[in-house]
Length: 309
Image 1 (cartoon, helix red, strand yellow):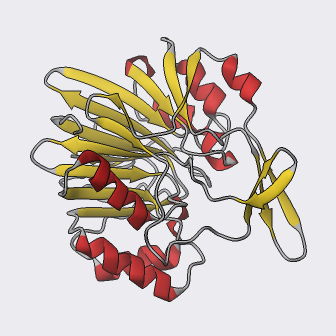
Image 2 (cartoon, rainbow, N blue to C red):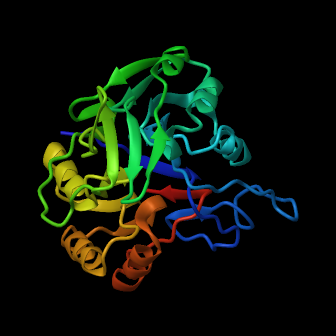
Image 3 (cartoon, helix red, strand yellow):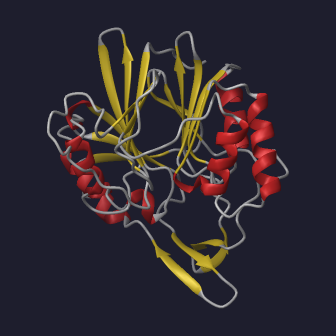
């Protein structure tokens, strides 16, 4: 059973899209014109890029703990946004890298260097292998995270092979079982192991789940390569908690056929979440479909958002 927490704040410190004029709602603040304590005009700008990162604050009683989940694409993007948003790296107690793609680890060294205390750095077992995208006419080298450079940082490298509660009320889930028939690995995304190129099943991708007192589960994904429905199912299974309050993150539906998008939405509705936020790699067509099919639950993503549970 996953410990319960009193309050959860997920700050979207990097994502593909930014709108500084989004009006805040009860459960989400927006960086920009309406951000608390911004008195300047024009308000300061933050960076948006093809990357993903979240700064997560877990509160139980009077105790606040923070986690950094992924690190964006560029070296200084996430650290600059964190500073602009007034986020404090000194309370960070854990860092997590969801998987070994460059748009998630690009800023890792800069972010870790801002954290004054040595923290555990959680990764999956395949995170240091080289990745590729394979097309019929060409192959794109996506590079690889350098293990030696990570080991030089002020962190303890921790490889995760099973669900793990890393701070009270916050759990890593992975590897994720493939249950649904319609959520299959992308055939063109490859991984190189010991000189052999094969389809990347992303069996080690890490997602997060939180148990908010009186609300239920909040599921946070980075890219959901294993399928967002598979991830939610596993979150429910490993925690034993059936109520899903919110689902946020990349749903990896960019370029998906309309049938797959609608099938995903139909399955999502069965969990009856109160809030759904497709981010990062979800793709415009999927975002549009969620906004139409789940009007009440849907929230638009934007770099600089703070989702409050």
